[in-house]
Image: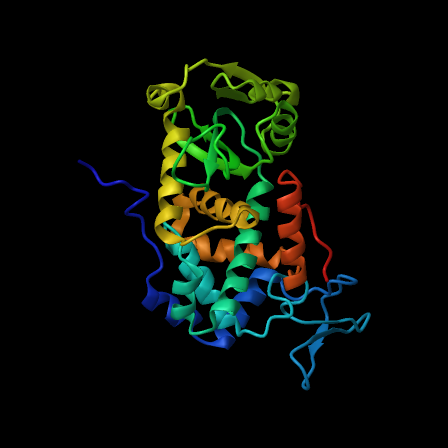
Length: 328
């Protein structure tokens, strides 16, 4: 049996990572090259002539005298942690296929659990926001899924204390999975699915789902919808029409159960976003660290109060789309 090219692809070893990003200066140089690949440009007027302040690590524009730091306006803005900690956290999060808990991450980083939890939530939020910018297209398998709740009693649809989420997997011409999108919703109603599809599915895509009536909202969102009545039960999971979406649901749930002790409903969208982000970039594991660093640069500052605001929004309306937050 031949080796799976994705599973056995080259990645960044811990030794190589430390040699490249083991010091604060190395991290700053790499971040500078990612933020300003053609040299510094003033974020206020766009002028490229600047000077360095000796008293503080700031760049001052020679034209408008606007002062800017390397991390201003990025996810790293306002941090008290060194960049080496951020870089190492991003490395560990992206290279662990099944995820890494905040407790395990705090031990690896050598910082407190609370600081690690906030750092990880910010990184996962950036992963979710950037991944949500790219709708699925082509041939898409769609299904309803649930997370959490008591183990006893009814399971699946209609179960209490469950967090519902939409699971979608886009396939290529060979019917292999290309991208996936797992999004928490308030419930499986036609209006909810229509709103979800308008944000996450390109028009004219072909979406296949089971007979759940709410999925009729797909057609109302300018996509082609093919409904297959499965009849429910364990046998319906094995139908070839839904092989990949059911496989991805199972894989993600097993990884989350095995890695995380507990996930609150208001935090679930970030954890789902983390797995989607890594799956959708799985073909280039070696460059995923740099890609996530770029995405963090293009993500607005996220102080603790903004994280709490996002959590409240997720709890109140899980379909709320976070576009661009102001730089606070």
